[in-house]
Amino acid sequence: MSNQFISWSMLILPWLTLFFMKKEEIKYYLPVGIFAAVLTTIIHDVGITYGFWVVWDAAYPLYEMLPYFYGLIPVLTMWVFKFTYEYFWLYLFFNAILDIGFAFFLLNAFFPGRGIYALANITSFQVWLINIGHALALYAFQILLQGKPLRLRSLSLQTASAKHSFDKGKK
Image 1 (cartoon, one colour):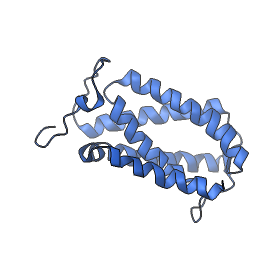
Image 2 (cartoon, rainbow, N blue to C red; image 1 turned 180 degrees about the vertical axis):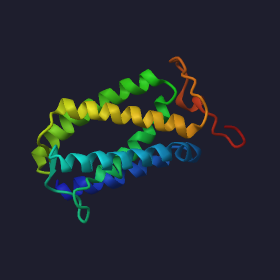
Image 3 (cartoon, rainbow, N blue to C red; image 1 turned 135 degrees about the vertical axis):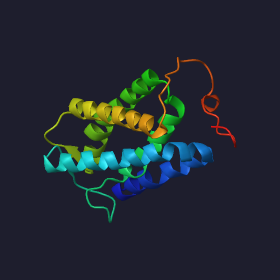
Image 4 (cartoon, helix red, strand yellow; image 1 turned 90 degrees about the horizontal axis):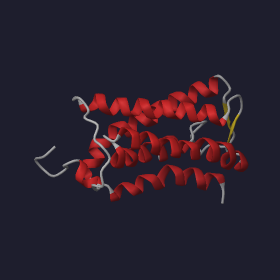
């Protein structure tokens, strides 16, 4: 499988999963998804400037902008928020697990092995810490965006669709 195919798949396929999310939920979580993409782009640019990582092969015509910034990152953020928002410790735990996979597998093994991307002057653990800070910034952004105090709920066995009322006239 070519690197271009992998790159374009990471850009396009995540957006197709939004067909399984309600329209109202997409509207509710899209701003935090966009913010995730912007914040990731800034973090990446800072990392390039300081030599933390090197991009060898990006999706044509994107230069040093890996496609998961605009495909996988915003969509995955929206899905994570859909299932964990208002349950802070669950959100943090779930993000920590995803970030371990990202920092230790994707960035440290898969991408370098394919000749796409490599860490240079930073460890996987440091990337993981940056990602946890990124997750906390996203959570704070969603709270501020909501415009009302957040009431953290205790973890219960209710379905994700029962958390928010996305029916017409209710919100």
